[in-house]
Image (cartoon, rainbow, N blue to C red; front, side, top):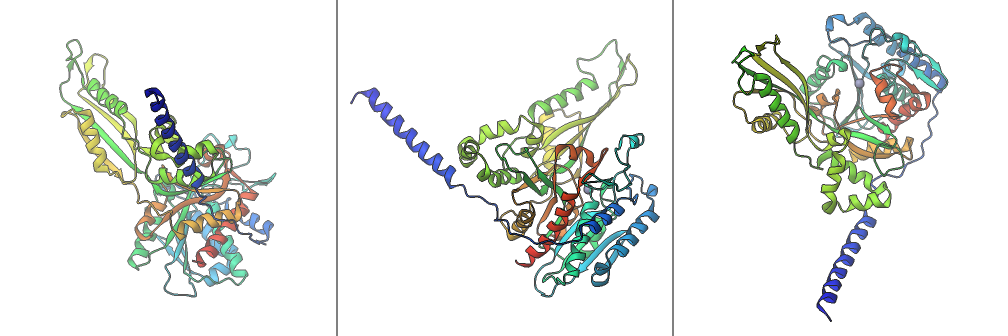
Length: 487
Ligand SMILES: [Zn+2]
């Protein structure tokens, strides 16, 4: 055999082994989706829709200034809940925290199991002044028309509060009794951070030694055409929340007349520091919730995509470079840097005495605010620029390989049978971060099938939800309670 033939043969054998290994790995990926189970839900739909519609008429609006809250309206909303859900209010223990936050405890028949918690909030963001006329239906009308329910809070997040209470009222009417304790916890100030609502609820429960198997809050939803290669709708369940850091870069001193500047003024120094940060960027790495997202999604993908993800050990650099191309997917695999404020200079012919830049960073789970500060200082490499970092750390990462996560998956698939349920990393905050302290797992998922337009409507104009989504949400909350009792 000639030398070249020999080389070709070796290369050929190598390629064959490579193909066998990678293709068989692709075929070995097993679906991580539980089989949907048929559910029989017979609720009085008209009545349930009327309840939701009325709940939307209360102007339980959160303002940054707590003094601007219309508290009597919050009181009326609580009265409305009492009138609307008599069985819940008779058979569950109801407690008010800081007057307007609500805890409902449904005692289970078996002791020895940890409780589960379902949480949402009934405050809503204001309707921006001047945009009221842009609403097709008035934002606090609760109008039901053409299969849609309209109003502020239909998605964020009265659908959670009403969905949970409808589910409980119906289960009680059916004579259902949970085995484990179930808590419903409703905040009234989530939109401004939840300090008086969710945080106070958590303080109280922590004092009493309550600890949850899992707490379910709003967060992800079921979306279409978001995960490349997956044809079915994908339900994303937030299993962690990125941290939010505010870094302030300041330099001061050496003003003077602009006719004799040094090579770099204070503006130039800080601008160059920002340029360095943007050019360097934090390390991107497909790990944590971003990685598990694809582990759950890959088995449902077309062959090509499944091949790539099943052989991540080879293709990881390629996957990462693809994810980095879009801001939404880049944010999944690295700490992001967004310079948002720059202040310097007073007058066109005077050198700026001081320059300050503020950068908002969203921090990956596993990295800390301290790491962020160190990264900035090392990258800008300028001792005269002082760096301070404040904000909130990323939350812990909840399990995905557990009955708790499977419960969320199963409940969602019992209602949305074709939804592929995957874990996900949240970039924005919700009340769930407070529950991190007293829950083994915190999941963030709103059981509705939404479009990217719906997302912009959440805090914007024309927020609405379909009747089907609303009824599915009620069914989902019933399933979550029943499913977790089987574990
Ligand atoms: Zn919300």
